[in-house]
Amino acid sequence: MEFNFNTHFEQMMEKNHLQSVVILGHMNPDGDAAGSVMGLAHYIHAVYPQYRVFPYLAETLDKGPKKLVVKDQVFCPFEKPDNDKMGTEEYGVIVCDTATRARIIGYDLYEKAAATLVIDHHASDEGYGDVNYTKISEACAENIYGMLDWEKWKKSEEAVKKSCSPNAADYVYLGIVHDTACFERAKETTFQAVLGLLGMGVNHRAIVRTMHAQTLDDLEKQAMLLHMSKRAVDGKVVYVCVNQEEIRKYGIGYEDIHPIGGILRNCDDIEMGFTMYEEEPDVWRCSFRSDGKWIDVNQLLLPFGGGGHAGASGLRKKIDDSEKLRNEILQKIEEMRAGKNA
Picture (cartoon, rainbow, N blue to C red):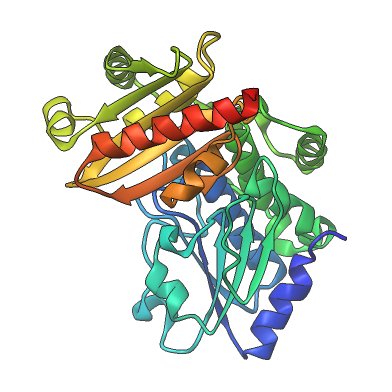
């Protein structure tokens, strides 16, 4: 039986006598986090007008999804909720698309909440929260589509109100589009959700345009990063590492290097791509992409404290010897491949 969001949400709010709910995603949110957080925020705003809703995404949201979010006329998700906005009474928290507590944006809000509900789709979810619903799928937003009462949403006055502001269906569609790379990794259940959302009036072309937010300068930086790439594991693995000095010298942001792993993974002669980005001195943020079959990058990263999905996983680690970390990861890849071929 599919998780019933309405039942669990109502229980959380009524049992704890709450009037406010904060909705959070992960650090440096992507399209799926934005779609999940904002989709739920608009759903609650429409179906449960008696509650105050505070979604928070942070300014580090990817540029593509931000093109839709900045059109929102109901919420200001780039402003972190505080006592001036929320008051001093207790509140509930919903966390979306975030496998571990360490990755929650606005973790202090989660920590102080009277009750918590977690909705996720990562195999590496650590099972935190008072209620944790984790269903492994291509997008957290797909899970959210399946758990909401869309008939109740459509009947609500706010949901059907004619407005230029994105609504719950728009945002859930956004999350699915981005986390499946515009349906490249879609499954049958994904298309079932897509058809349902399109039937509610989602503008497919407008949402897909959020996939394309690059400038010529962005492409030039990515070309430079690709030129810096190095091969390993018989040429089947390609990686790019950028340290603090290079970041300052070339003006490289995480949004520049983040897509590189996927670009490499999609090359016919490459099985896996990964990037290592020194976002703070001795703090490395790493992104790994594969087809999930040649190697399961979730299993690859678990011994190092990372994880995610079989085909897309990440790692954030404080270490003063990045070369040692990289070599250990490459050695682990060799061991896993040897085991598969045994």
